[in-house]
Image 1 (cartoon, rainbow, N blue to C red):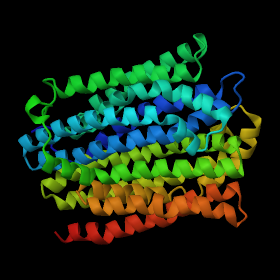
Image 2 (image 1 turned 60 degrees about the vertical axis):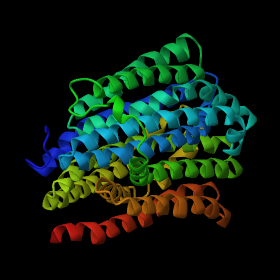
Image 3 (image 1 turned 90 degrees about the vertical axis):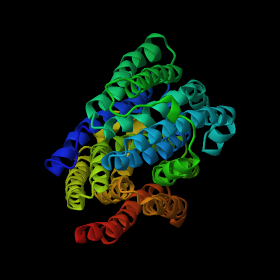
Image 4 (image 1 turned 120 degrees about the vertical axis):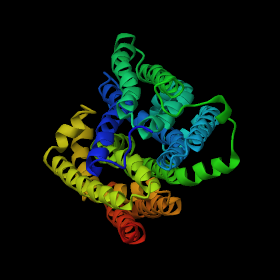
Length: 447
């Protein structure tokens, strides 16, 4: 057994996992963010191309939701089994997760490709923005199996204590994406189609890297042919625990649809484009705290399986403190530099002018996100799937989506859409963290 997380300083174990994960997530973020940056600066397209990409987000988020269903469901079970010394069970979990991801990717491709036109108009597309959204998705969707395998299985590399190898999964693909994007978009004059093609080729390379590692000799626990056959009892365990990640991404899809449709009514295509930029900024600023909490999960799960409950509590405290500190700093950056953050993605004067006030509203009280991330990751890492699922639903489906529809009708207009996010962060984040403290943390302290 290598990489024993029950030894050494708990904060060092978390940081050693989190830093490569942050870099990996940063690189993964570049897949889409770089596309948006290039597309936002397409000559002659104004903000419409960026609006079209924003309309494609819900479908790409839906694909991510099913990736998380199996990836974030299998990885904590894998970590707990590994910590308990049950290597055969751990490899069975790995093999089943691989099969589930592959089968689901085929179904997702067929659904999203065949129904993309009615779905995009349902999401708030206009005749002008649909052209860009369809051009992007028509190519991007062919990469569905590759993105699901590379993203969904990469956690098993990190869970075995190889975060640098996990980082390389996305680093290789993202560097290729950075190189190919300007070539396809500008040199070959393919526009949004070029962005999608560059992303697909990058995803193919990333998936090859993951599968090569998890079937090779360097991995302590590998994908083996005899473990690929579906074990339905284990599948239920994976889906049950992964439901939290699925609902988080699925409700993100719901919120994106509701936001785009509401903004189309109250602000038109311009504000759909602004929301695309705000989501991009949020993804960038959320990345460090997301990487920190993701890095803590295999460490917490391993120590929980090894019955080192004192170390689990130390890990939760460290993750919470660092997350709150970072999100306070990020909120300060939004207040001080809104124009700079927006200008990364667009040069459109109208979008920049309207986007500054929207950005400040959207990120109001951003530090409450740290409470949500910490509580959610603790529940997921230790197998408390029902709690994780409940708080995923609470923040997005119960608070954000209804407020996004209701607040604009009170006279707030488009501002009501942007107010929904900070309100949900405050209520949902505190509710999740306080419940985790009383139902999980205090029980572990007494052990």
